[in-house]
Image (cartoon, rainbow over all chains, first blue to last red; front, side, top):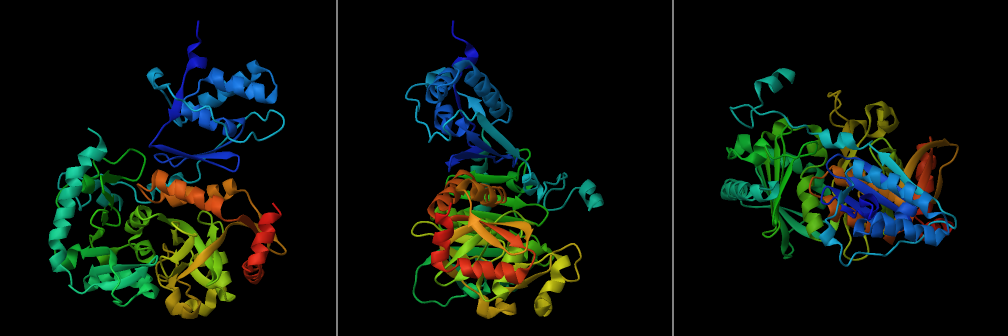
Length: 153
Length: 354
């Protein structure tokens, strides 16, 4: 029987999330929250597979074969990595019927020995999204502020 | 119904209202050469105060086709009220982010605090800026006017407006990338005081369709209030000194017109790091490190810039050497390090040492 977790397929959560592979690293930005991320190690190498819809099983198998390492431990690491990406709404589930023609491409492998799946989260830019905060508007309409806002100002 | 499809009729209504009011503006446009192209701006006297930062880009009519028409309205002097729309109410603003609205070929962004509506009609190459009251704008609107319109326009023609400082010579220069407080403004001012050309301390235009070229967006330079003493030579040029909650700013075309550098070929992107070293050291950095310094603020400050801006910034980081400047605390030393870097063979040498 197929394990639904290892058989799941994912896509980048566009248009809220954008990602670029550069220099052995993936930089991801969530445009709604202002949080951005860095993915390194094996995660950067298999990023095209992951967002291209390969299953967890296919990816962990590819990583384990490349590094000649234990497939079960790679799969555990990958499961944790995917869970974090899903928690941060970087990935969204891909419907099964969208599985045809998926990418099996990888970026350059980053190290001779298995480096694990690096993931860093940065939230120092979130304040930029509230530079011009939205004000509540009363029934009398914009551009006048609501009475509450006027009192706060 | 998605916000985008719901926004389309509202965008059309706003555009039609603004379009109809164009006749209220002076017929003769002010011409500017921005990012290499002719831009015609029509604005009444009150709203025209917003244009001071563009002064070095003033141009005469040399017969070139106008690439972009901009219309700026001041609701007070031009007597123009806007229709009540979801955009100006921001009923559809996505939770947690700046509210902006897009429909095919058009974008709009409303800033309720500043009282500024920006609307770009790409198909007609027309941009509209509506100001609730131009005399009540916060200082940053004078420091970087029309920035959302310029961003959408640049993205539509293969470039981008970036959150970066820029210094150099006519032969080439560098972007100095990093978030506010990273040292980019201080570095840019130190470099211009030491004789390098000044193109930006905060926002800059980059054309990416050919060899990457950097263009001045604004003549503005800002400093933190605590460092005013270090820039005493320009004290007479600083604005906002009486406003304790605003950064002092000046216009380089007034303070040091000989240092204004309107454009240059991009040679490298440098991330400054305040390192308190005895002497500044510039070393190779990874493209990923530089992308992290340049992309988030360049994208997040600009609603609807999104994926296109990100791809363009990443392409820039791949196209030119990426460097890190570990700064000393001596501005003269910092400027000297950048001046040495701008000898082309130095940039190549530093990048090759990676």
